[in-house]
Length: 359
Image 1 (tube, rainbow, N blue to C red):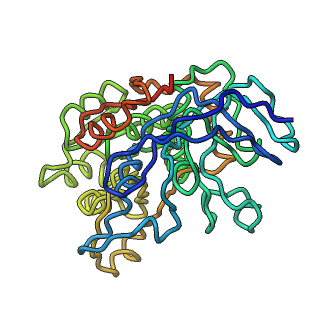
Image 2: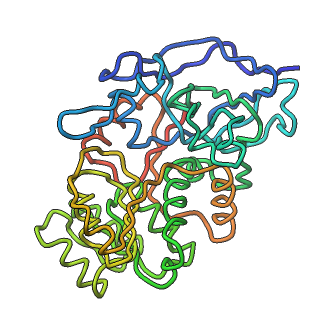
């Protein structure tokens, strides 16, 4: 049997791309089959929600990637960093228990293709990600397709746990790609917003040697230094790459770009040592033109890193429970403030993360 608490729910949705989210009311879902219904307790606001609300990513040269062309169907409820309480379960939802507090893994694939079967649902070609291709947590309730996407957070505070679903697992997945030099050489992190501060903390928890952080905003550089960055640099200075090369004794073995703009990509690649790796995570947008001979001559790697897998989410939560929550500043706001929060985020006025409460 299904137990459903409440008759109707509010959902803040993208109804028209480029317009503020609209608050709509729907009947509270009744889970069937393996579905699980969560009462949302905390929903983090992510910078990628701005792109989702706009409906596109910038590709550079006046080109855009339309999210509707990629399968986003409107209206859609945003919000992919969610923690909730299990309030109803479908008859085949084995393992789910009413009353449990769980983090909702948002990077959901089709579940049946070869990529999903090997554990990389975040790389599925038929994604059903929460808050992107299916309704997310800017709502009173959130419906998950299967209990395997429920992650036990133990006694972690819901406000601090929610951002782990995106900024946490995204930076963890990127840091894993660094390889053995994580423990022996500095990692350069471009961007000191919520994602960057999370990356600094998880880097330390993973046993990283040291972090060098780059940002054009002096307040964010100060926040990065307070969070444990060994060095901080202004990415807007003409000699930023030269400063990084000097500070890393000839260039960085790994650069993680959490911005992903034309300028930061050039900076990241120019900051590498021979054999170094540039890992691009951010989706700000743009393009670059690169000469090809330096790739083999410098033996450098350019690698994309997209969010994180379900196994990586479980690994991250276990890491956090062993080493403690990342000390990222987290502010809380009511769900009704979501449009104001997104405007502040777009204006670069938020340090750390904002988490919404439906109540």
